[in-house]
Image 1 (cartoon, one colour):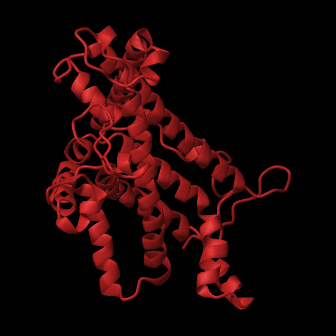
Image 2 (cartoon, one colour):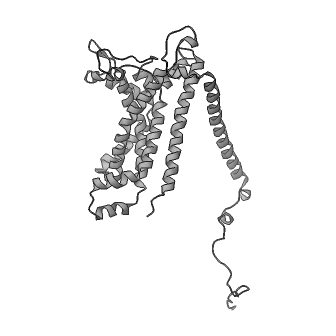
Image 3 (cartoon, helix red, strand yellow):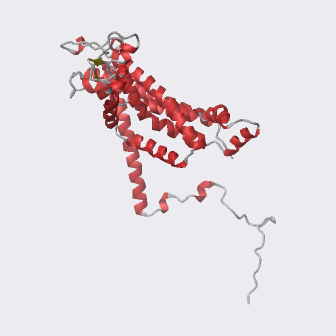
Length: 335
């Protein structure tokens, strides 16, 4: 029976090095050792990724070239008017201001509601059955097409009880107004705010809460003074993403705000409620109507309005990236 003999130490008296390799690259299997099917799959993934990037760049570059070519500063400050040629039909200032109005009103509803729902789901979640129903409802709202929300909003805001929010005539409630459109657009942004805020609150470890409780802070004070300020970058990200969804919607605008290209304020109503109760338009609706297949058939102005809308969306995306970068500089929670 052979006896086991210990391996002699290497030169210099040191035992041979055991354990992981010095570099992480040495532990990663190279793609050259993959099977042919795996390498084909990797190549397809790379090709699809490059294709999507190329499509996005092509859209942005094309709209920028066309938009800069036709955009004039006068279009931003003059409303649309009737005319026989594109040079006589004014600009789209009403659409631009309408976009800003629905964006501010919509996110003003979605942001506090989304933060409240997220805080309740993460920090309380009682009763459990109601919390599960709420989560399912938020997910369902995120998947509902905006045209369905528009039709649902028409039923709600055309009721007599909500006649003070829109134009009425001889007891008939039209249900089209900035109030109605903003309320339904807030539902489009709500799931994004809830998801982002929940992510920020869930990333805070439990010992932070326990430390706050140990110094005598209540749960409400802990949430308001510690948790929400710590989750501020995620809240801001959700708000910006929600704004992007709001200003990019068309179906709710057409159904609940009207297909008009100008403000249609309600008479005998104080400012600004005369405008908020009336019909109007946004940049998405203007692009839809001014496109070659739309009713206005003003493709040059459609490109110009689309370019302005693109700048707004790119600005929001850049703001989201800045928020993420600043959050990484501050650091992340560690247990």
